[in-house]
Amino acid sequence: MPSHSTLLFAILIWLPVSAFAQAPGDSPVPTPGVHRASLPRAGEPAIHYVISIPRSYSPSAPVPLVLALHFGVRGGDATGAGGDVLQALIGPALAELGAIMVAPDSVRGDWSSPENEKAVSALLDEIAGRYAIDKKKIVVTGYSMGGTGSWHIAEKYPERFSAAIPVASRPPASAAGWTLPVLAIHSRDDQVAPIGPAEARIAELQKSGVNAKLIPLTGITHYETSRFRDALRQAVPWLREVWK
Image (cartoon, rainbow, N blue to C red; front, side, top):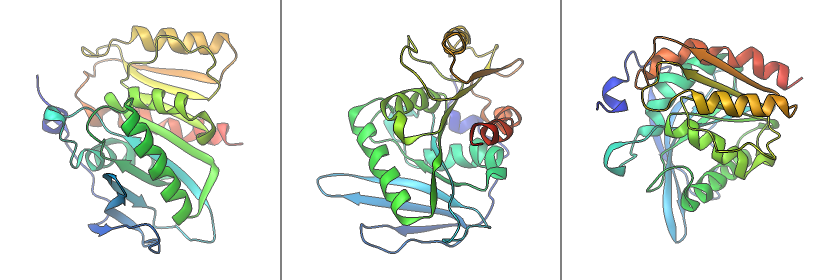
């Protein structure tokens, strides 16, 4: 089975990618562009991530924040995977939001592990503390393993997010107690993660009165990552309605 990295095509580079090491207490890097960064932690693995800062960003005007979770990787080495999913799918699709986007590399496993829960929480704290973020407009999204992680992280920390947008994901077995707005994107031709569970969870949420929507697609298989862009662009007007 081909890897996601093999099948990511037409990757969009918005601006040159720079690299910086970000230690607690440093001043933020507010320059527009796409930056690779690392957040060291005492006694814990460093969090490596990519951050995209829109051209229009100003420290005086809070902007939305998009947390982008990457797909699974072979051998467990997630180096660069956050940047891959940001550039191939989430960045181009959600650019109109004018949001800061942050895409971490997972720490030794999938997003549901306690280690990654802790890492994601620490990274959100760091970004929210360094940049002008509208805390009522923080979204978690992701693709494949990252889509499944979006469900998980949103359920774990519902107070941190205004919405979840899982793509090609495996949702939880039950959505009992779920309150966040959710927009799921899934292909009926997904040969890895069948659409049935996503349909069931969205229907369950709708029945309980939650703002939940499914965008079903056809003709796209699981590993055709960038072909989900057009559907993910539909999240922009949906989010603007959520944020009213």
